[in-house]
Length: 473
Ligand code: FAD
Ligand code: NAD
Image (cartoon, rainbow, N blue to C red; front, side, top):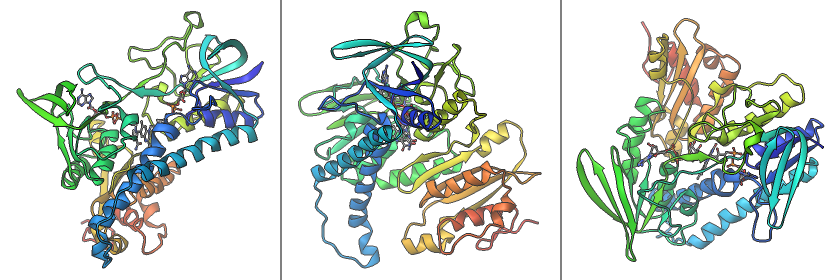
């Protein structure tokens, strides 16, 4: 009998399993994916076909584009860089395999039992595991569902894994498509669109909504839209794809915009219209757990489901589909199973788009605060006024700090610019400790760093920034 069975080994599941074992709970993690040698493929979407491989390609493609477009600004002449796409892909594969085998090593070190097979919950104490040639029932005191998510398919553009692909296929092109179409201007569309655009594709993005990045700060969304179009992502809003068919020569896409029908011919088409929770064949009817109309498992703030001792975390439950949110839920849940008082600061989950420049934010936007009728003040600082940003030649964008009008407590940090993810992370730490804009303004920041822009934006909240004219009356 186990104390905890974790279903799925993505960033939600593997982190939950390791922490459960650290807490002295007898733990097994069931994973259905396996590699070419029949061993468990640990790490889930994040390590295998998500965060990590996409960041490997974002980094490689950024270096390539830097060599072409920016080395000469620094007085470095390198001639025309030559692209070896198979080497770039090999590098990506090596990083993935280093990290996935790292999870396997961590399981061994922490005495987490790995079980290979598809898990189905029979009831709160029994899980059926089916592998290629066997099936067994495992007994447990608690079940943590961490079965993750998969790309959404749309009937008008069915993925054929050749020239109409999802995000997984878009990480594996063997050559740079001359013309690339992307359905969806969300995080994947922007990140993978950037990768292939930097490597030479002519990229057209078709987004159904009229608004670009509706979850981001309005001014940032506007600047990001302008910048990415300048970089070569041709982003078209309000475009409803009506069909996509593949012929020998091209993928023919038809879409409607404002009543007008247009055609687009591309070599490859990426469908990036969101992800859906993995709950297929996961729940036996008898187990008493149900899923909502979109397939998510309903949970409360502690990730408890409606059945006692069954918990659900990560992409399979509500909230942003992010690896760090998934892992933190994993830790919270097993700590609660171990009898600790853990909870999770859902309002402090940061978001990042790993383009260049990066887009990142935490907390509330001005629009959300205004809608809630809360009074606030803001301070902004442009990277063009940051000495370090200018020295590196990356001074696009700005950072904004939002604070409560009366108490000065920081309510949000929003950035578009160099190292935005790491800078906003400092805002997350400040907010976790309930800091005010003044607190951040009184903190010493190393000079010259791009982080100084956060310092200045925090000081600007109260009209005290040094390197811009912002004095409040
Ligand atoms: P998953 O990682 O999806 O893992 C679920 C695991 O459960 C899988 O291994 C699956 O095989 C297994 N499983 C499912 N059902 C069963 C079953 N019945 N029995 C046994 N095993 C089962 N997030 C970020 O925070 N930062 C990023 O930069 C980022 N980049 C991304 C880039 C791309 C291209 C994509 C697609 C996603 C990206 N994400 C990113 C999102 C991130 O990958 C997910 O939020 C995260 O992986 C969710 O973790 P999870 O553990 O809930 O699920
Ligand atoms: P998304 O929800 O970010 O974006 C999907 C976009 O597709 C939306 O803008 C939506 O309006 C649009 N869309 C939906 N249906 C459409 C249609 N029929 N035609 C045209 N446009 C359509 O989803 P995604 O980009 O697929 O990413 C999936 C998840 O993975 C996200 O929830 C994200 O959190 C996660 N992810 C995170 C990161 C990161 O943290 N940097 C990176 C990649 C993915």
